[in-house]
Image 1 (cartoon, rainbow, N blue to C red):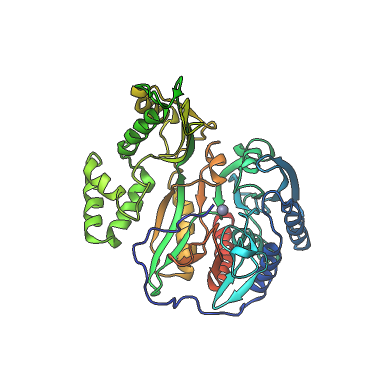
Image 2: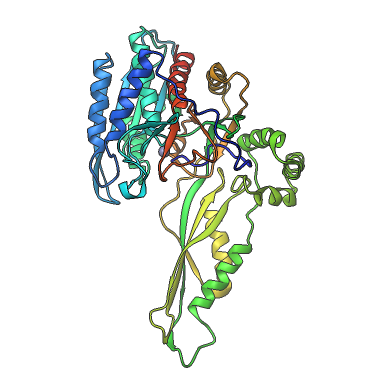
Amino acid sequence: MRLALYAATALGLATATIASAETPPDRWHAKAREIYERAISIPTVQGRGQVPALAQYLQEQFRAGGLEGVTIHPYEVERPADRTAALILRWPAARPSGRKAMLLMAHMDVVEARREDWSRDPFQLGEEGGYFYGRGTLDDKQGVVAVTAALLRLRAEGFRPTRDIIVLFTGDEETGGRGAELASTQWIDTSTLDFALNADAGGGAFLADGRLLGFGIQTAEKTYQSYILTATNPGGHSSRPRPDNAIYALAHTLDRLERHRFEPMQNETTRAYFAHRAESAEPALAAAIRRWLANPNDGEAADAIEASETEVGITRTRCVATRLEGGHADNALPQLARATVNCRIFPGVDPASVLATLRGLGQPDNVTVEPVDPARPTDASPLRADVVGAYTAAVRARHPNAAVTPDMSTGATDGLYFRARGVPVYGVDGSWAVIPADERAHGRDERLPVRAFYNDVDHWTDLIRRLAG
Ligand SMILES: [Zn+2]
């Protein structure tokens, strides 16, 4: 998953100045490109059974590079039915420092892409105008490849880690997260982990005029939870309408939901994020942010921030109707009307309280509310000085004056399974994109600036050296 890299307001600026072509300057960049090309060519879409082929290829790469401790864990997923796999690499400490292990995460699967929807073959790496094109160039094969190439390089250069390094590449992040769940409960003893670094989140954003907005380090994710709202009624002939009606009952509930505002909230991550955001936001938004930071009880200021185009979902829990069905004939009173409401719950909020709120909204009309799957709430990870410091240093090695800001995702990644087990997880990828032009994860003609790709290989090399050296 990779949603907006960074909030931005500027649209339609001049053509990109960042995306100038560059030939690989060293053998590790060339090696990374070779792995990237192969990885993109394997359509690791759920239902096609291709993730094990990529896992196999990466295992060969690690072994050829002298990293022997690689295992492949096959597993099954249901929606749609598929055999997939996760890869786990263990590189034991050569000079043990007594510190717990560091986990590096990325995912090998990608969202489906159809040839006819794209202007080129999505499963062939293209390079044009300073960009790499192909499904997964951004989400998240670049993360897989950057971590892989960085480890191969460090191994070849004789790097001796002072703590165990464990790598987890999953095979169903986009559809289920079962690989991360199994890894966090069965394949990896989470009590041995100090923290996890996720290549599927974080990263930088440039505007088309070349200005760098900054880099985000993801430390929190909202909880994903859907609910089914159901209204039932005895029904009857439509020529004789009853006073009560399932469609009206549901509509009244949805109307109350539309007007409902959950309580605004802040945490360490969003406070740091907004403190930085106030410096670049347009004046009205900046003023609202400053008012809210000064007084977290200023609900009006929080509402103004939430209503802006760029900060949606960051000030609180949000729920929205996403699906609707009801009735069974043109000339019959509806016996059933049903809506799906999707919520993104603020970290630390008990999903039971959201359920209670929704049930309250349905009550005057006897609309029932049930959660779809059990929620997996996670707390925000603490802003650890060692991780934030290493990320900031690695970013500034390539972008000297970059602002680095903590970031809360409104979506979810594999990281949540480890956060749920008490392991702090940090989205610390070092690639970047030009926004909004390059925000194409899951979309048509997905791409990544060529320089961002090579930067990311160097970034991960740097980051691992700093945190395990
Ligand atoms: Zn992803």
